[in-house]
Amino acid sequence: MAVAITTAASAEARARPGRRRLRALLRRPTFVVSALIVLWWVGAAATWRLFGLNPYVNTGHINLAPGWHQLLGTDSLGRSVFARTLAGADTALLVGAFGCLLATVLGSALGVIAGYFRGWVDTAFMRLFDVLVVLPPLIFLIVVVEAFGASVPALIVIIGVVFAPGIARIIRAAVLAEMGKKYVTTAKVQGESAARIMARELVPNVLPTIVIQATLSLAAAILMTATLSFLGLGAQPPSPDWGLVINENRVYLESAWWSVVFPAVAVGSLVVATQLVADNLKEVWS
Image (tube, rainbow, N blue to C red; front, side, top):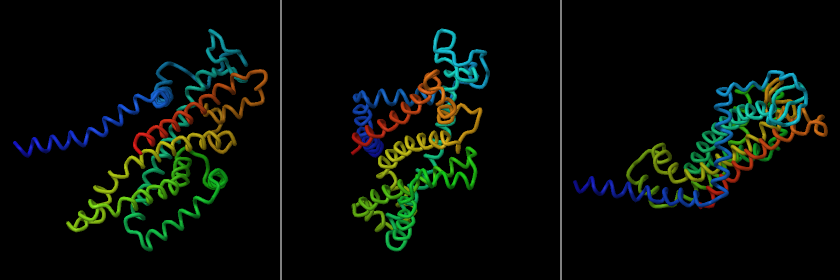
């Protein structure tokens, strides 16, 4: 009974910092508003089909201004800007989120391994990271996309590989800061394997850093996905991808501004909101 009470008390003690951080985040207007914007776009990507929206059909009205019949107007081919803006979240979040997830898993694993083993392992990884980080991301992405194509799976892998080194460097630094602490030394003395120490001891303690870097990478990945589509290296017509939509309608900016402005606002709102969520997480967890 005493052991059970002690275990419950320690579990409650471990949960308190998490609750305090959550309350601190919810008291921040920038976090709440940004989180709601991100949730709006996630919901739009997941549910736009359920409302019968069709981003591909010609409504019969070309470059129609926003109004009651078409909330955000129509584009140069008579397609609903509202439907295409909501549907565009699909590609942005699919490529951005899965590319970011791959980058986070790969970068975190390499960072933890480099920070734990140090020595020649750390040196080899760091030289590789240095080479990849120095390359301009956009130029590197353009070259790789031209070589391997612009399918969704290819874009996810490419973005994951491009963003992984930056995450790995930061996670490595966080692991190095933890290596001299008592709990790591104790685990080694107790004979725990390197894999167990990394998975059970180090990763939970650098998890806040991993989450922050994942959120920052998500914002960058979404922007990079839209940029590639704008340059014609990502999604192809008739996709409602935001970057592609902006590129297709930019010549109508003066006569039909709504076909460019609303997709541009969508990209900007999602990227900025994701960045603000990451900034708030960093401030509360640091």
